[in-house]
Length: 484
Ligand code: FAD
Ligand code: SF4
Ligand code: SF4
Image 1: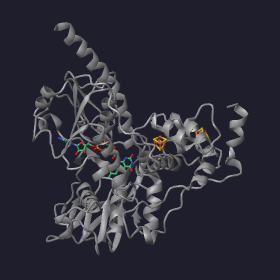
Image 2 (image 1 turned 180 degrees about the vertical axis):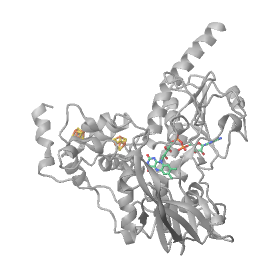
Image 3 (image 1 turned 30 degrees about the vertical axis):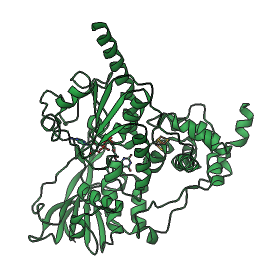
Image 4 (image 1 turned 45 degrees about the vertical axis):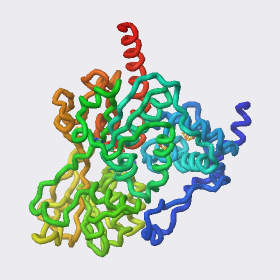
């Protein structure tokens, strides 16, 4: 197409304002775990995509961890060529409709859109990405997974989160026999049991998993490496291994009373809620332990996990929900969009505040806290919080949720493999050129290498590690042939 023709259809950002899909009223959102916004109607998607100025150097793509071909699929969407847009977006991502929903776009693609910088409001890239692939699923354009010509080699993947599923898909397409082991009864990792349905409905993940199962990937669910097999057992069974186990050791907070009943771990709380969304029996929800109904809830933390806990509590019918965070709004790690959503739904943020004790012996009754102020910036560039003297206060609480982040579990012990090399943070040490650990043929990807990160980085790692594993397996096959 001539360049001028492209320009005629695009560059509409001056006359056409930014418009995200409309969110449901907060009062209605609070009644269920469905996503809070629908997707665009076709003409709205085309209109919003046409705001893109088709940059020669698209900063949106540069800052997308997958380097998605964003201007290309925006142009195709604007022209009504949605199937081609889907094919283009599918080239670089195994789950575009998931990223479109839950990437923190304000920090990645949209946060770096030039139109945002010129004051017109970024192109709504995530919402268009969701529209394209949801449409593809609906219209039957998403092709079944076609396994490649069998190579006679097998791969064992530990962990069925975004990193493991992505590598599994690409390795299957390359012709390997793929086995994915996960300790949960359902695949998906944190997409399934961490992230709540109001951000990502469960059937969106399950249809991706089903496609992989239909494509011949062997899922071994309820299979915990370290309990049902050692790492060495799996190395004996497969030609290469990928460890993609994520990070699950919840960070602790030391303060008097923290062991009181009613003080809970964020992920246990969210997993119980997600299981209810699947229709599972969850005794610890039914007996009230992980149910916020009619309770005064205090969530400690300011990241994505804390945001998910406060918004889940609202939906469970909590009496009040407060989020206690030691820095201020501008210095929190969670997405600003999520804070806005939470505030709309009735969550109260208690900024610049840190807990110092939990009150109540039989059961928690309150959280004692102190006000904080921000001091000088630390090594990471963020200003360190300091205690404000004589500023203590108390918040009534029947349920306290600790959402302070996650570290890596002790994999060398857990896997009965003391030789497996880890960093001082417990994450797996890999050679960054090959993504291989210190054990021959054992690769690693996702949060277990990066530390707690993002879904889109898990997908990127899963994509990258496939290349390295493929190279290793080809060389191994050649060496075995020569030795025979
Ligand atoms: P995971 O998704 O953690 O998957 C690892 C899998 O390995 C799990 O299924 C686990 O059961 C399995 N496993 C672990 N140990 C074993 C073992 N020994 N044997 C067998 N299986 C094992 N990111 C975003 O981009 N957007 C968000 O909105 C967002 N929200 C989040 C909300 C919460 C509550 C949390 C906790 C995280 C959130 N994240 C979000 C981060 C994101 O979910 C992770 O970065 C991403 O899932 C990491 O992918 P992964 O494949 O490395 O690991
Ligand atoms: Fe933006 Fe994430 Fe999609 Fe990349 S994958 S285009 S960062 S929403
Ligand atoms: Fe379009 Fe914005 Fe990307 Fe430029 S930076 S190509 S305007 S989406």
